[in-house]
Length: 261
Image (cartoon, rainbow, N blue to C red; front, side):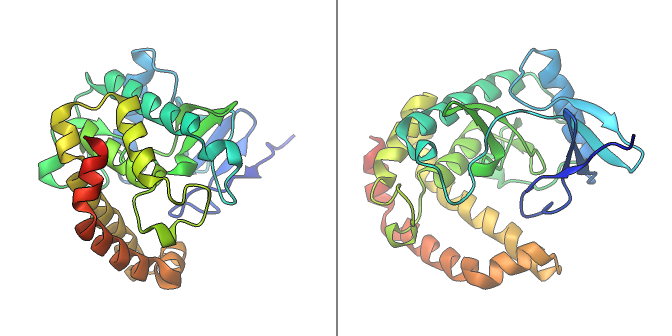
């Protein structure tokens, strides 16, 4: 019998191209795939089970990963995913990942997207801890998936990305879910749950602002290259939201910094 393929939602870059086959996931290979496979092999070797395991490449030239059971957070966001408990579990998962990856040497690998040098201390970050890249079970974050943007960065850069997406850090009028009006409290709860050092707390707001610019530049370049889903995203409001958010980071810098004190 032929293997049954069930299409998974996938992210923006791989939308429509990710499938589940039994207890495995098949995804397109990318130039950075060998680097990511080495990273996943390291995490497996040190006993970190909160990521997929790399199993090889199938006959269609797709990477084969173990399927991680659970739920990811996609719109409309379920109530459980917007709680402080879910938020704090993401922070704790990210801390565990950073502890597990600390011994991995990124040298000699081709990574996808360089982060700003000010936020690159050599630790390989996930770099895209979006809501749909975290697997939950019973309202608790249990795994990171989709390592397409993984590469040398820092714990601070990953925390900034996660806080920006999960608080979220953007104008309150642009938060169209249960998190509206809670972003300052959620920013503080995330930093506390992660156990962020005082030094990194002092840099977190600037890192989040820089992360937003970095991420949106990636989306813009994808749109300009003709990628259909990046183009749709950029031309249906993302470009104007980007400008509003950049301005918001500038005008709310002191308020955000005070929330972390």
